[in-house]
Image (tube, rainbow, N blue to C red; front, side, top):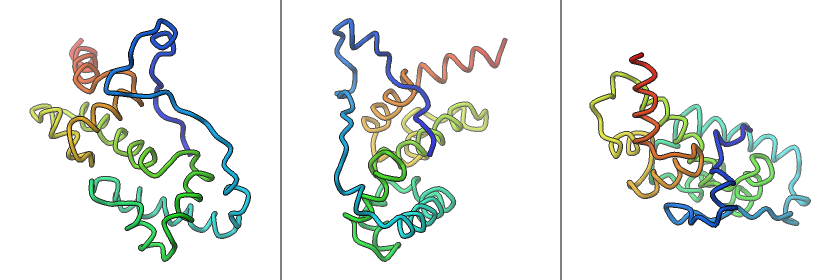
Length: 158
């Protein structure tokens, strides 16, 4: 699938600055389960995951869990997790947050939602609370939602 929009600045890490919102550096591991997934079934599940999560916009539901997705796909959560990790290169939460961030970026720049608060935008995009929205946004975009909105509002009014 697509890579995250922008990563946090590596210079901040090198300079020894503490990352905001309790973010931790991502660890990449080669998991053995990736070798036991049947390719045909994984490809079929990949398409179904995209249909449910993206086309039906289930990412907007903050309560939609991996367990519920597995139930909808008639598979078990462990196998679903393995497919998501192997096909998307990320876990379930990161996958949903990627689409939520894309939605939030769109909403933050949409003039129809200019009067909405940052917290309302986060909720509309599918985040359960302010903290998870800010942390995911910063992790993917490299700045806070407020700073992103302010910076882009200034661009639009020039």
